[in-house]
Image 1 (cartoon, protein in one colour):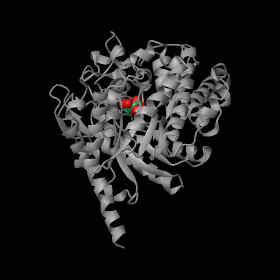
Image 2 (tube, helix red, strand yellow):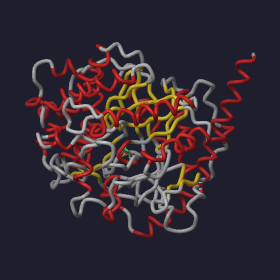
Image 3 (cartoon, protein in one colour):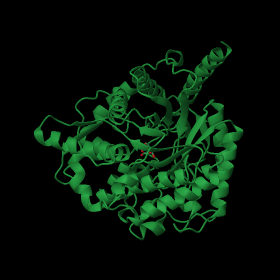
Image 4 (cartoon, protein in one colour):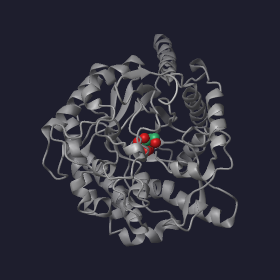
Length: 481
Ligand code: GCO
């Protein structure tokens, strides 16, 4: 997801606490792969997104996207980072897929870049852009890896932003056209389609507080962006269904339990409102066809006849991105009067200042299951930030192993409690461009040296490979019975 917590870290964590928590985070003892059993059909995977890894932003006919513009304006990104080169995945793709295959990972979630496929944001196709994803998908199949294609992970063509971006209702229809064209092209080779990644994060950070591209601020643009993303998602699902796309269709949302920072009335009210936006304003219209009561007034002027019917679509699978609970306080300077505040509950944090609260994943999974009709869910992102280029090799990432195994244990508990969770994808396959934080934090199972672009698997990569191998063994046993 992203990242409130850059701000929260500044609010909540004095440096000593960070140092101590880092120690705590890295000393928790990881669960051995053999004690985590998910059965032979559970899908382990890794996730990435186009702008964060591809680079090659001016190559082969790609057009400008909102992140290209935003990252090159001063003051937006830590240490002037940008995705111009990122991991140079565009050129190193076969080696990267070989790394995924090397760990025995059978599922890969990636996104396609809209500006690479339709550089002007209109119907003009860039065949060289399609050729890149043709090669990527073929390479995945050659390694027996299932592609999970996400259509939109925040990289809107700048040409559409020039017409208002997600504040413009028309962008919803453009997304549906884009989704239709992409699904038509790859329909025979992609079985898992995910429309959006985290509509709320794009709306809040891109169009609410200006921390992400395109850097817009304000209450009106925040709600407009969120509604139009929801609408674009609904229209895209319909377009894929109309195309009779043979695969499964779903989307990805960042779903995290929200708590008030303190038990004051103001913080409690703020937290309820924030929850209604962060979780409710994506899930409720999708599954129930209405916005949560607390935000209905905010969305009312945006909802044209049939919008909610168009958003309310059946999906086959829901991707849940979970990193930690959100702790919210009243904040008069924020457009909705609520924003990230201190967390008085957590005892461990990642170096990024995000609390480590693995039980929160159980809580949110159970909530979604109970509230929204027991959908099939997979964890589409969960991961641990480190700063591994600063000292040492950065390969001994025991903190990441502990984080992943602790979260998996709570995913398992959710499954045992009846929640239909069919997979778990680590964020991320390799270190990559981390939005407004640039290259400061690293989430990868594989280290990327951003100067030499050399990739080196970390300890967590081997641990994950062992975990997957232990399941493969079980599958063999099962099939010989
Ligand atoms: C997000 C994205 C990822 C992030 C990851 C770590 O949710 O922000 O899906 O692009 O990089 O969540 O912040």
